[in-house]
Amino acid sequence: MKESLKKSLNKTQAGFTLLEMTIVLLILGLLMLVILPNIAAIRKDADNRQAKAMRSVVQTQVDLYLNEESDNDNKEEPKVSFETLKNAKYLTVEQIKRAEKVGIIIENNIAKRDV
Image 1 (tube, helix red, strand yellow):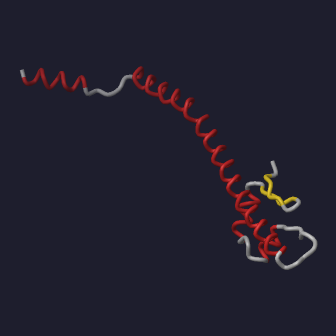
Image 2 (cartoon, one colour; image 1 turned 45 degrees about the horizontal axis):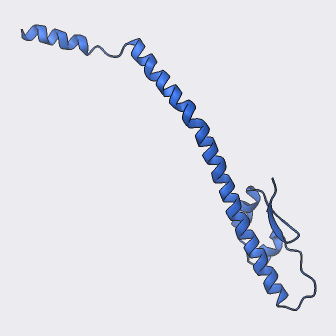
Image 3 (cartoon, one colour; image 1 turned 30 degrees about the horizontal axis):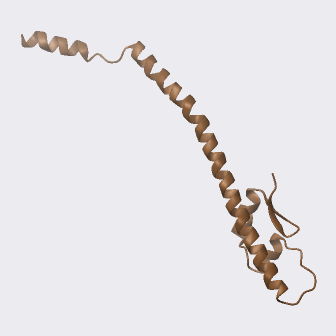
């Protein structure tokens, strides 16, 4: 009796059939079709949020610079650029690189996203 039990156990431990493997691959393929578009949308949303936050940082620094310059009794409002903010130590080189990477520009003393 023990031998027949061992033989039946060995037969059931043979492995997966081709049909079972195909079904598993089909299910994994369907999951990838559902997940990949969502990942792309999440990445795009994250990029937009990063750009919005960086635009806010740059605009804040532009406003601070203009506020400080207006206290110096200048009649004209100065043109602000990334170079101006870097030289006045309002932005670091790293911040400027990140801002340019996400498409932030300063136009008429307003930080915008160049799309």
